[in-house]
Image (tube, rainbow, N blue to C red; front, top):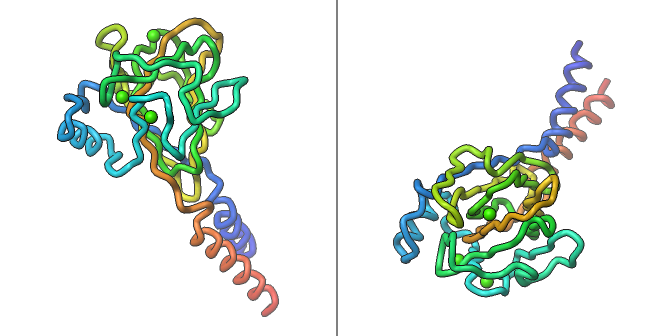
Amino acid sequence: MLKKCKIVFLAMFLFTPYIYSITVTSFAHTAVFTGTNASQQASMDALLGITGYAIENFEDTTLIAGVQFGPQGTTPSSTTGAGGLDGRAIWDGSSSFLTDIGQGEDLFLFDNAASVGIGIGDVETDVRMLINGVDFGLIRSLPNYNRTQDNHREVYVRIDAGQGETINSVGFSQAVPSGDGIFYDHLAFLESNVVPEPSTWFMMLFASTFFVARKRNK
Ligand SMILES: [Ca+2]
Ligand SMILES: [Ca+2]
Ligand SMILES: [Ca+2]
């Protein structure tokens, strides 16, 4: 019995860092967005929990360091690529990033992010969100998804990696490609400094040496 307990205990240590524990939190635009001036934006960031994050505001076609755009079939790029800037459905400044999702997956790539946020608008079809390639369901089924009018802000999504995890891609796609203009803005990310966490490795090392020592003492 004791031996069984030890095995279970060791298994918990070894496998805990690999349990998939990404969390998704979504916010209605009506609850967080009041305007684009500095104080309104600071209030919005605080409500979204993204204060201090790096922000790509899509006011130009160049992406800030740490994020790339790589739709299916094309090379990841530091520009918005085939998509265009648009003056509607903005979450900051005066422009958003508009793509036709019928052309393929909209894939945002990160260099080991701990957390990512993105404002999304005008989702009129079944668009799914994929995080690190894993399907997290339909945008329109997210809690607080709120469509108030055409070509407008709808939902802000914040994605948080669990302990020892990182976010390397956030994609949006249709199972059956059809035309739908999707707006993105206020893309936020926080880079991770834990790949994997030193404490995780320490625990694993400690656990394994502990059990080796116990075995030898028998
Ligand atoms: Ca913008
Ligand atoms: Ca930019
Ligand atoms: Ca649309």
